[in-house]
Length: 211
Image (tube, rainbow, N blue to C red; front, side):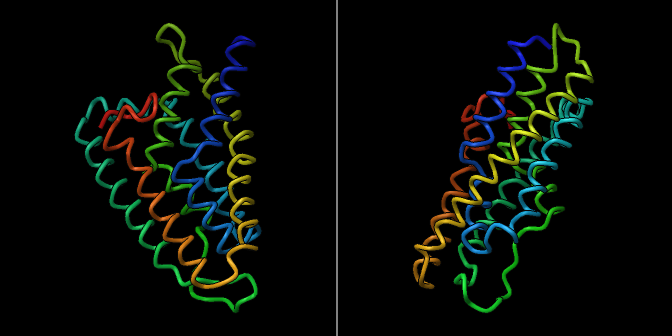
């Protein structure tokens, strides 16, 4: 991988990781509701889970979708239903103020966050685009390049998603009443639903899966 291509990869990793999407929306909501420390497993699950996803896509996982087109439709349905369920959970979460006693609400775990990448339309589009453009040359895919792409995203992604978590945590100082926190959660839920547009309009993100 040339130096210019490497810089382009780093830039793509940063821009795609820092811009709004399902992961960042949920991390911002989690930061506001649970704080930074309790959201750390969620953050690490996103970063590490997505890096693993890139490796598996680079190993040829996309060939499964080419061989069995119906899996595209299945993934689309699962993604839509799961994101809608998550949006509902966020919107209906019991407001918990920073100094209030613990409630039944809990942040997403490491494994849940890692597994979520497989039904996250933005994660799929990022992984496919990264492998196609930065790990494949003249139709040949270098596993060393796949590993480098995965490593770059792992290094770049976690600080980016961490920034969204911190932003949510900082908003806690303004969410000083149950009504404000409830409104915030509803807004986050609406934004999460809005991230479904790449599935409904596949050209929404470059390189996205064409369901």
